[in-house]
Length: 348
Image (cartoon, rainbow, N blue to C red):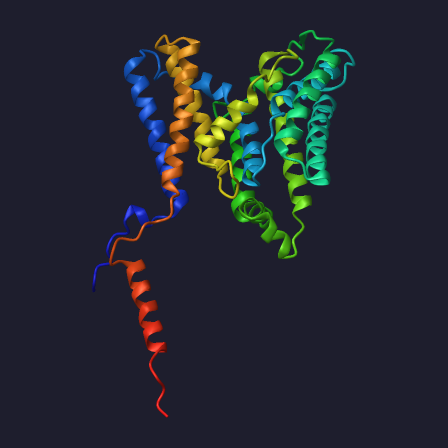
């Protein structure tokens, strides 16, 4: 029997090579900081990272869906603050049970996402401008709800942050489950394929008889809902709600998603890759802090990593170039032959 040649890495599915590349980058960071910092490879350090990333991970999942349809949501930080404010006020001032307060928090996030989506699809406005306006509206509403004061909830929501599943914090488990579900929805459902098609060519989707407006609305609603889930987790972790919380969260989420390879132009992205992006940013920040890097140094290095990731992603998705005499040359010669054949006179 003839032996089947091994498949080269270049012929592997694109998502496999993307995951391998992201995993390799993460391993390299772990090795570097493990050598530079004495206490980096400790269980306590990894538990700290696992407890810090659930909120940004969940927001990054929603941001992935928004970027895939060629949109953007700059309001997630302010929506998180407003949703958390609703949760804290319901618990402390109105003495609502925790499930009722969480439901009210979800309603606040969903309403913000719904307003974003309706304005975008009704007047066909750029999501950048619409969500920028929502950023200010939600932040002002958070100040109004909290009277511009930090609300301390104490142990009213500690059941969320203190619960562990298989020695892992419950918020981290919830974040991983959301990543898995988001990836399945994106890659295994008709809804996810429609979103990729909208990001690739929305006009073609419309001409094929599919109305993209309900789908785009659903994406913004989903992003608002996931942001409110992140608000519950973050408020429970800090046992308080500062109306300034979430400031700059939108930039962190976009950075993680872009590092994961999701295109800002839409039509391409992966929830799992965005999760890798969150891990890379978290490991990078923790490692730099442990080796004594200042906040300014961390921001510079993180910015360089983001730019480098975008450049690498650009080159990775360039169309293949055909060498001289290769497939393109063969096509041209075949076309020339066809043209020369067409000039042959037919026999009378």
